[in-house]
Image 1 (cartoon, helix red, strand yellow):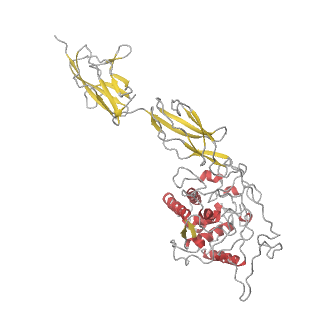
Image 2 (cartoon, one colour):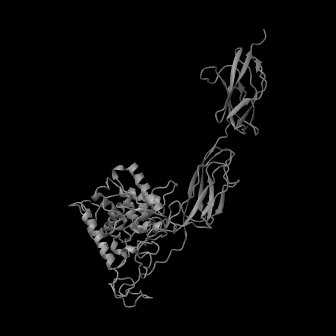
Amino acid sequence: MAAQFGRRLRRGAATTAVAAAAVAALSASQAPGSPLVASDGGDQPTAGATPSGDGAASGNSPYFTDLPPLATPDKPGTSVNLPVTGSVESGIPASILAAYKKAEQTVAGTDPACRLPWQLLAAIGKVESGQARGGRVDAQGTTLSPILGPALNGQGFALIKDTDNGAYDGDRTHDRAVGPMQFIPSTWAVWGVDGNGDGRKDPNNIYDAALAAGRYLCAGSRDLAVAADLDRAVLSYNHSDEYLRTVRSWYEYYRRGAHEVPDGTGILPVGSSDGKRPGSRTPDPTPTPSASTSPSAPPSGSASPKPPAKPTPSPSDPGRPGSSTSPTPKPEPTPTPSLASVRDAGTGDLTATAGGAFAQRIKVQARSNLGTPLAKVSVTFTVTGDTDASFGGKAAVTVLTGADGTATAPVLTAGEKTGDLTVRATATGTTLPAVSYSATVTARQADAIARTGTEELTAVAGQEFADITARATYKDAAAARVAVTATMITDDEQPAENDKGPYFTNDDGDPVRTLELTTDADGKLALPKIYADGAAGTYKLRLTTAGGATVVIELTVEAPPA
């Protein structure tokens, strides 16, 4: 929503002067005739108006209004490289900075005409979440605790009813902006992307959120190197002139220099002890000024005033927090954790050979309405489809999630039926969507087959050949219950089934020259009786296993005695 609904974090007269000077300098930096807020596009609001929040990435939820210090990290226009050190305001946590730069590189490869600068992502991340609460993320870039905006319930904010059943924001009545880039769930459903390659699209992960924000800003045919297009992009994120000016201020500030700081050590917005969103907490009684925003020193010779031990009942500054004319808003109650979703937790490819075990075990994670893992949730894994695969002989098993919210199914074992099957993981006794996994059972294979006898196979026409046996192996071990095709073949360059010479018989006693057979538990194969027929000469029998191993056996037919 428009910035007037957000709590401006006041800093005192000196800081106000600095902020005003920064905005004035920014306005002066615009090209002649190029307004700060572009007005020639159909997606722009009237100055000072507050359009519906569901047309913006963040739902026009409130944001931090701190402005950068007037003293910039570098002289204007001299460098856009990252210095090793600099002012505390120019420090960006390592994982956050890496995510912005990775998003810039990714978008440059897919949409080079957009010319997305990482400094614009840094500016929006600063204004939306204080760079993910000063870089409080884990090794994968996911926030250590959820960053949620206030409920968009139409009471001082836009009215956006729940679109995600609380899966991302923990609110099943209204939507809230979520994560370090503050996407509302309905926007995330369209623009969410996997930025760190872990197979998930998580608005709480800075790599996912930064890439999604970059692509959102580049929507259409925008060229962010053009001032008007950049203004439109920022306003599409939050429809407010003040928001645009604030983001623009930080954008220019970071363009003049920034440096990397360790995760968790980034500077937090003034008046915020933990980087929470404005409107989502009770303001601190007295904001702690930073070095760059300290009020001017008292005149020479005057004693330094001592801060009172308690807030003064009768305020001397009606605009300062704690004033009797500016009541402290009540903090919103923290939502109680409850089950919101069950999702995949990194299960790999599910493939097994008939009769064998699947190497991968199915793993899911239960998540709460606060976006955190939830323990002791009952999850049921069920095997479906025309299959005899099972969990130790059972088609369904139930497992409880552990402290990390994950539940791992027992080993899934393939039966003798080959083909595809499905395993579904559901939160037992709920209507939450199931997580479905496709699995495949392949035929047993052999990579070698050989005849076990060495004597020549000779028979007089009209008589039977001696018994023929063979053995199939896979990786030098017996290939049990492997399918083998036995075919009488021609002696052509590309052999085909021979319709003359030796033959087998089927169950009705009719001659056939192709049979489907199976090895026993030891990989051995005993062929049925073969009858000599046709003109005298040498014929060929080919054995082919599932897996492609072959052996060709010669059969000699002799003419009967005169």
